[in-house]
Length: 201
Image (cartoon, rainbow, N blue to C red; front, side, top):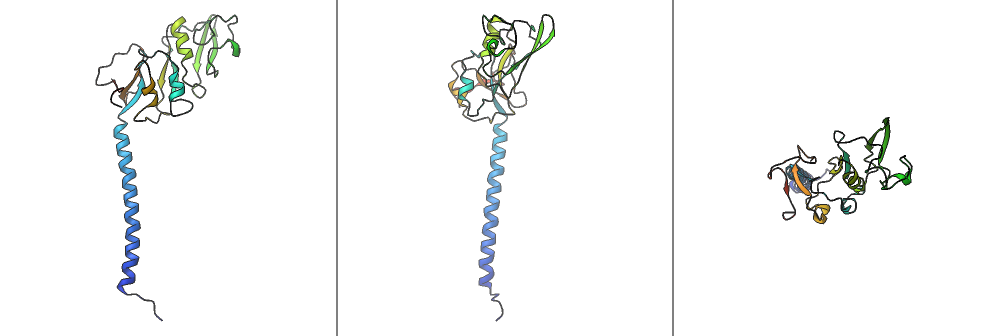
């Protein structure tokens, strides 16, 4: 017998095909809408104001990522390249060497390289850094403050309601433009550019 090619058969087939196409279109539209919304929202990103940061260690434990998207960064222009670095060595250490017991960083994220007597260069291995700020506090106490914390935007997922910002006791977390996402100590920014989000999250 010849195959039934009545309009009823085609209607059911077309209905299923159209339904699948509509579902796919809605799904793609939703993804596109989410991407557009996210990129619009991405015009402002979270950052730490290093002038407000009190090195409370909450960045290491409150980020939704592990290790935290907050990393120590080094302003080489400010660094004294000291043999006794307050951000590298434990306070009161007897030996100024690279032994683990002499180092302040709990994850060995700061690398020390001899330049010439008495100068050493200190670099941060961001894969090891957990954002605990122990080195930042040490550098600020005994040095010139060339180490400070920043959110690394190649890692950060830019949560709308940032858990670290909610738990920051110093209100040091601010929103800054995505095209200029890093802050430096002593840098002056006008309020529309960097505004606190503590009440607007």
